[in-house]
Image (tube, rainbow, N blue to C red; front, side, top):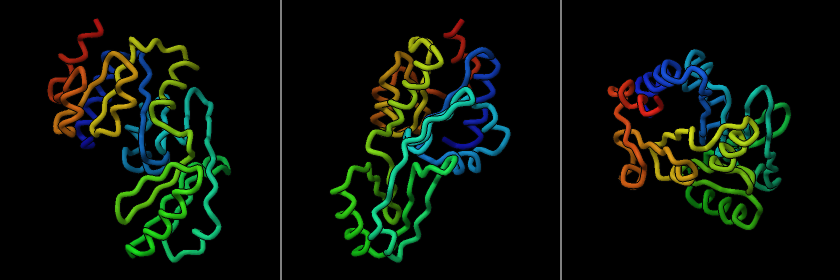
Length: 200
């Protein structure tokens, strides 16, 4: 979502639902999300499912699904970044520019108990049990948020699994067509104040 549109969304969530904590579901690591959003926007969140659910942060607590990378992959000439929280690695990002090398790494990872996401030249690895839907549902359960009072907003087809878990699913404008067809609402950030009156 564009940063300015996201800022408007957060402002209205804060204005119209002061008692409604804002929880994020992100494919980014917590460090990447903090950098992308900036300190002010990031501070609005009361928690989140980061790295596709590999790391959950909420109410001063955390749940980290740690992942080990294959030793022989570490020996490759790819640029590998380990994303960790309190000493536990929950996501690996690998930049691999050579096609043959990417295919070699992917074939080795496929045989292991990981979730592997691939969009050239980037390969990301998270725990096999990680998931944004699982993460958001876990946070809602632990913090006793009724699902019928939860709104999940997304912009890509990958978000649909998470969005379909609650009655109030919302696609932002310019989302992938699948999402705008299946989501309950479509969100125009310029009309946010009117949109959030459904809570009244």
